[in-house]
Image (cartoon, rainbow, N blue to C red; front, side):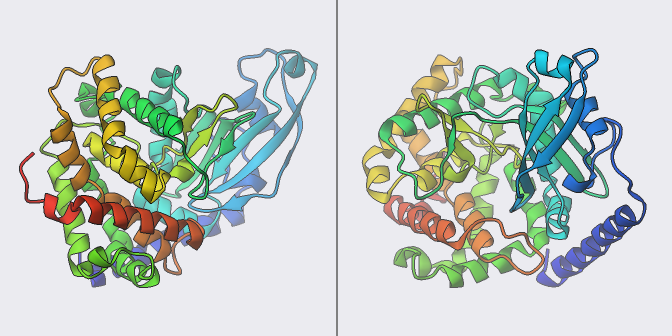
Length: 396
């Protein structure tokens, strides 16, 4: 899609989202039924919360609730504190839930292109129960409404867990745990026939990126390169004109290999650490199907310091393959083949972070610039170390 047509598409979507939000402000009076999706935190009511949180406990009701101050990003997020009647209290219903909603205009506009709330609802409503033995987030309610792009998710509050970010140190034990979790998720959906049935809405990596390109993605990527130039590895920076095209080539290469479920946004800010020092994965709003190495490269490139990644990456990929085989994947993937896939799949991580730091006025403020710069230094250094650009012409 040309830059001109991207801008026209963006303007049309902005008008549609703006119209729906105006209608909500004019006519919305609070969400009372489970089938209703609150237009934001201000539309939540005790009746609606009772319907979605107390439905399995006879006589239970939410008597009152309060919200901590919301934070904003691709969605608005807030911790909700709840008080129940005697029936709800006796049943041990959750007194705190973590809420995510598309409240702001920029969040709705982003959701219109990415369908992020749709993907996260697919995860919670169709996938998460199959991963219940793994360290992932759970939801009590997940819903969305098209074409207004409003959404609401009420998630289990992660007691005694700490969220990580690029300034968090990730040990070798933590990194092995991350690889184990990804291998177990990937194994359960390896060439799954469900991609043709209940998971048919999940796009391939390349299809998904083509949708994102309607958000002037390449233009914002170029802006991001300018803003982050001081940390981008010189060997990658001098070939900046090739990078976006190389990303699309790498995504097309994914279609030539076995497909599995990818989280697709596994930067270290979407992980958490439990009190037992186990790593868990959250924010499943970017689901795609594609090549396993896309998640592996992104996770290691974001999570590890440059020195640790250089020292550990091959051993961590070997560990991933061992767990994949333990989980029943019989396809022959030796370390050298996996290493080539790994080299080829760093571009997705790169353009996600150049897009993030290159955000325009109609985009959400997705991440602090400090985090973007750390990620881009790590990712581009990895790409230079392993010659990601030179890997694209090699046979898998």
